Length: 46
Ligand SMILES: [Zn+2]
Image (cartoon, rainbow, N blue to C red; front, side, top):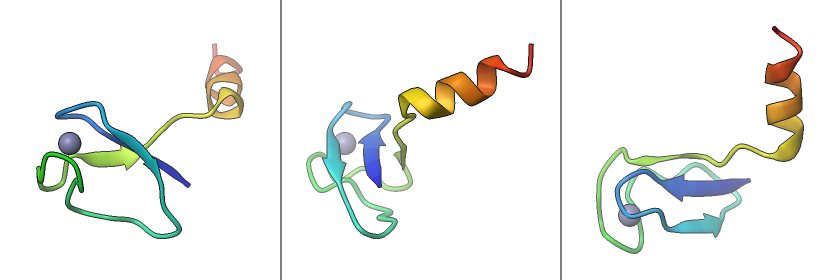
């Protein structure tokens, strides 16, 4: 999966969920980056 840090915007590829950003060290700031498919799935809700 691809993770993105909401604090610094750093994105990186990871095989598992990580709680601490390896770039800025912020805790619980990482979330999965939305893929194009995710955006398409969401748009179907409208
Ligand atoms: Zn960060």
